[in-house]
Length: 75
Image (cartoon, rainbow, N blue to C red; front, top):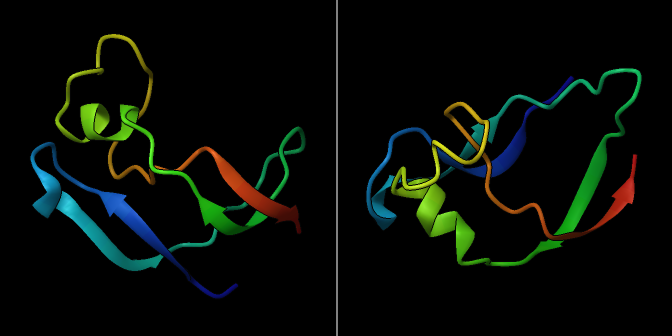
């Protein structure tokens, strides 16, 4: 499968840690769906994640793709 484009965070820090790059296309599990994003919201929680301020409240590992509030189609 082809790669996709995404903004990803690989390290905690400031806005310079956001990278627009190729990322592997996800493979959904049996209880998940694959979506094609048309638009994503910019939410204040993302800068807190980027700076590492929510590691004790949210479960995730880097690299992470912010943008969970989306307009999309199910693939």
